[in-house]
Image (cartoon, rainbow, N blue to C red):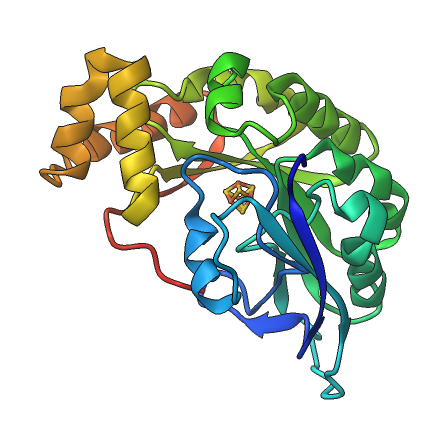
Length: 274
Ligand code: SF4
């Protein structure tokens, strides 16, 4: 959070129709994200934010809305969040996510939260009062050195696993999104083994790269994991899909053997802007 430029802004509304499969609406209480993941998919949001600073060095706080248009969310699937982490460290002070969830509680919506932060535990009391909520963690490795290198400001591996366990023990529906899977670096089998006692739902997504993130990750691989440089070139420069086809089969076979529900979202398509 050092040197993070924070600005409070007025938003037109918190709820946006979603292009994400399975979700009708998304809510992003913040513009930008202090977690600074090396591969961040949300970096394209800079184009819409009136910021010149590098992505990860600013966050706008949607402090209030001018919206007066009510939306009927009865039976709708609502996701927090697609282009920020709704439990990023600013949430501790601003409590926007909590306030929005309090409103969603009476909306009839089916709410799904995805985060990389143990701050989510603060709201267990609220989750327990919500009629339909699932809380999940993104976790792509059990190696906390790798986590520090690629997700420097998100919660540690152990903190996320502990938070998952705590939610499960408090009867909150949980899930684990094993994503993004870095070729040969994400030990997804270890994540499944570590998380399986606390969730029965896993989803998987491969690492997709473009623009600045592509450059950052390829540089990281060259410097820190040179043995895999050729493989990453094959996948991300030559666009060879065979690694992902094999990994998909490996995941499904591993999960089937253990009777674990698994959904694999692998794609080499360009990431769609939300
Ligand atoms: S938590 Fe998500 S939005 Fe935030 S920096 Fe990481 S990938 Fe980007």
